[in-house]
Length: 135
Image (tube, rainbow, N blue to C red; front, side, top):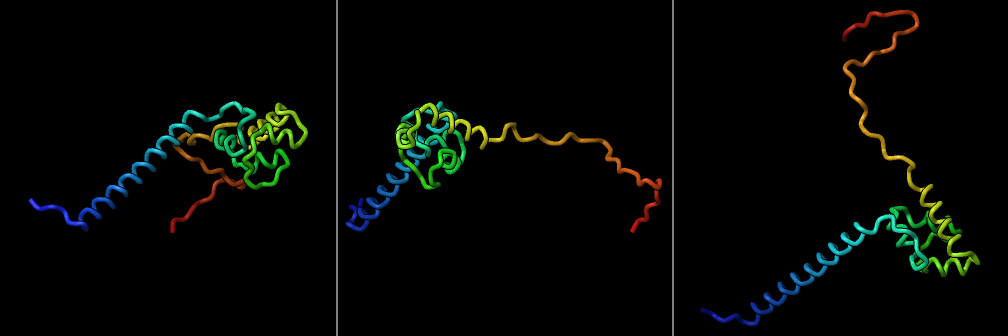
């Protein structure tokens, strides 16, 4: 049996580093996916920021910014700080955001497939039936 040289140890170390980073990012991705799976449509709380609310309600963040009269850039302040800066109550800001969310989402689910019909009928012209030629 042969002992590893320094180059082989370097390759093993590089491989372990790559596997460690891959594992770390895989765990982070799975944790985030699980977190957001269970945090959809959370009630809006004063500690939340606009990005968190937009993610939870699946609406673009600029819609929430526009509803509050803020510039469309990312705003990391919590709702309570935005309310304080605008001289509004937290409940008023939450109501504005909820209204914006309702108007940003479609009020109904997307339509399903059209029902299949046995025979498609063509409307007849007002002059009566015509003869069709084949090419």
